[in-house]
Length: 335
Image (cartoon, rainbow, N blue to C red; front, top):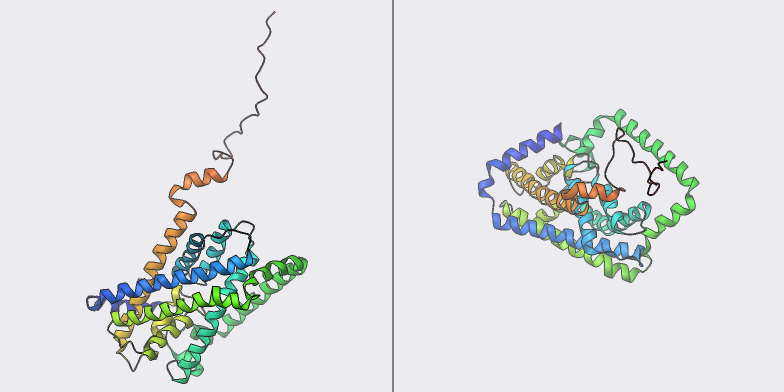
């Protein structure tokens, strides 16, 4: 409830100051946001190519799968969009398996993990982020919920352990095949030079686009877009997805940004900026994501899709099955 209340307060601050938004800077911010997605897709495509070198993997198929997942993650908690990514890309890569595709998503996050860790260390050293003792006291911070509900945290931990045991039991019976499929997803790491050229280079460019997007968002809402402020925005965006219990980290971003930018702008201006940035990016993500889902699953022509996936017209249980044709019948003899 604290997350929802914080987000609604921020939304009220945003709509009360929407007339002052610099729309040119906002458009540029969203443009760099879309560019960032496109660059990340190229990196994932190259990871998939390394795992399936004999398969033809089209850029736009990977793009559609990736942005579909991003769109679902924007409105659904717990990163459910990653399941959508895997489902859609599996339909486009012949012979692919979910364990291998899941491994490629892990490889796709390695460079991000390194960069985000360095940014967090830098932000902590400059006092931009709150220290660990202060986290539970920050309103709408997701970790505060678990700090104040230890019994629930213990229950969820037990559920995770039980699920891990079930998975371990299944894996023990299929350990050889599972290991091969998982290892195949890490094929891009075998050649370091190719990994740097085909993956890290594109992801580094995506971080440049992300920085420029954050800078223009700050400019659009008339907040000082210095280096420290821009880095604070990047760090908060990364932290809000660590425990994604709210869609897009709604509420968490607003609370932590108020703390991080308290010496840069008034709280009302920070709230307006934070919710405005989130609403704009969510709108773009949802438009791209569900547009991609509609195209890739042909939901605009759902009847043709359903009929094409079966052997003919749909029959209900009440509809009698057609009798087999035994060939032309001979006319009855008269005599």
